[in-house]
Image (cartoon, rainbow, N blue to C red; front, side, top):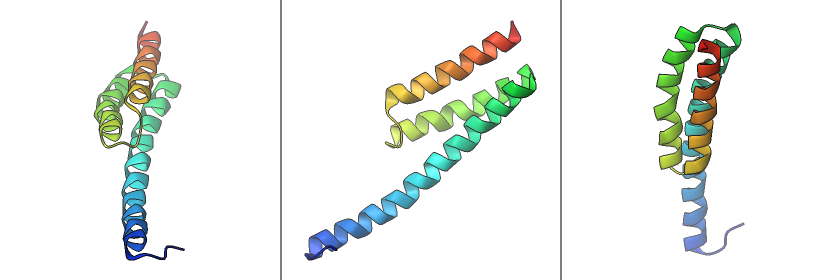
Length: 88
């Protein structure tokens, strides 16, 4: 347990930040899941719309520090690749 006032404050800040990051991560995963479900169903139109909605969410998560920038780019790239494969 934190003993000093500064350590106690840091613990409070970390707790608040963790909640925010959990929320952002969950939101991003929801959007990614919607794309994956549309891809699994074979509906390229729905998957395209879902990907357009998911991409900004993934990049926002990277910008806010929930994901690394390269990880976010890789996720978007792989989803787009699967969508292109479905359309072809």
